[in-house]
Amino acid sequence: MTDIQSSAARHSRILGIGAHRPPRLIGNEEVCTWIDSSDEWIQQRTGIRTRRWAAEDVGVVDMSEDASAKALAAAGLTGSDIDAVVLATVSYPYQTPAAAAVLADRLGATPAAAFDISAGCAGFCHGVALASDLVRGGTAGNVLVVGVDKLSDFTDKHDRSTAFLFADGAGAAVVGPSADVGIGPTVWGSDGSQADAIRSKFSWLDLRASRAAAADPIAAEAAAQEPEKWPYLEQQGQSVFRWAVWQMAPVAQRALDAAGVSAEEIDVFVPHQANARIIDAMVKQLKLPESVHVARDIVDMGNTSAASVPLAMERAVADGHAPSGGLALLIGYGAGLSYAAQVVRLP
Image 1 (cartoon, helix red, strand yellow):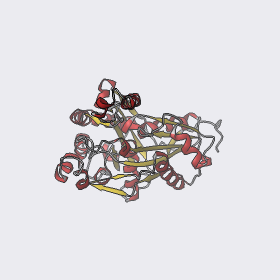
Image 2: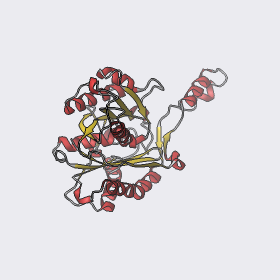
Image 3: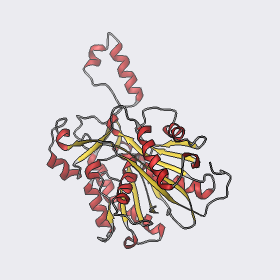
């Protein structure tokens, strides 16, 4: 492990990235057996053709471990080189301990600091911001940032507003010291007044109460008429769509301005993969030239929340759409409502 008392680095950058994509593909035809919809409607509204769901026995930490191992290998490092693990997720089903601590142990990163953050679909970009500051401040030498979600555990297959959207996956990045600027200033924020736009339908306390009622002989009959209050995700689709279309492009532009670069200097645009129409609107508002590759991982991955941005970034690099050392504009946005954006130099 690097000396945590080492002097601060002048700059930071992403040293390596990795991804885990579950092998199970779920097409729109299968989704339409759960809800009253069609392949044409889903594609027109979201751009999604397929999404990936992890197997029942594969969890958040499992997917994170695979993505992280690949990111470490790409960076030429091992778990013992990591000083901190920052894991962004909203679907780890345990209140404590943090998934990051379990992951750190699996990777051989102990005694690295390890903690989870919850910022919805903006989680990975928040993690990159934290990691960059930890490295530049001298608190850590190398930081592992993971964005991971298993939304299939919290998707109501019969909810017509969400059943076709959510998916599973994990993406990871190693952030370390750099002689040159590799991660620009982060532009981030939140609007808690719109917290209900994307939320858990019930709390764990609601679930406990519903189970207690079902076990009560007097209340059992009434309880049987109601579905179990599992904390499924729900969202106000039109509200989120309007917010993202009109509010997020200015945030992305501010990130470009903060980094001192123009749209013409960007090689790749990696927005949160929430909806193809939102991506198209942002590209138009930012006036991105055709030379900029726009990540569209949503087509066959769906919305993977915190994993969305790192998965899309990894694919752009793996497919050769992003040049080595090229500039990428990242932006995540979602539950909170929260958002974060930054310009990064790719590995």
